[in-house]
Length: 137
Image 1 (tube, rainbow, N blue to C red):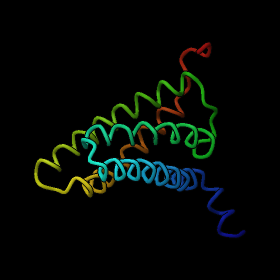
Image 2: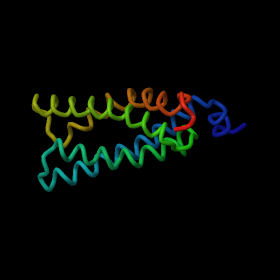
Image 3: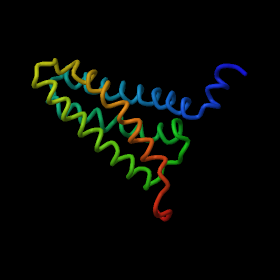
């Protein structure tokens, strides 16, 4: 049995690796947008929010189809939104704390991602894997 087959047979580990790939891409999208908007001097909270929204859209579809092998639905979309509302709030609070204590606004998100990514994995997995209460949604 080759290494990839062994990895695929360990569904929790394989799922986490796929989450890291999708999360890494979503984080790169978020940071690239934030960085570009900082270069043009857009207010950092607004720049962070725009980047987050655009990466959120990518993340929702990639998390469903690639990471957790689920189908996007209104129910999952709502739970994903709630999970990310929590994550976004945590990140925005940390962004403002870091900038207010003197961390450069360009690199502050890097420190935020180190804290929020592991938390986000657990919250998003719960949101997408939870069985719906009402299957009519």
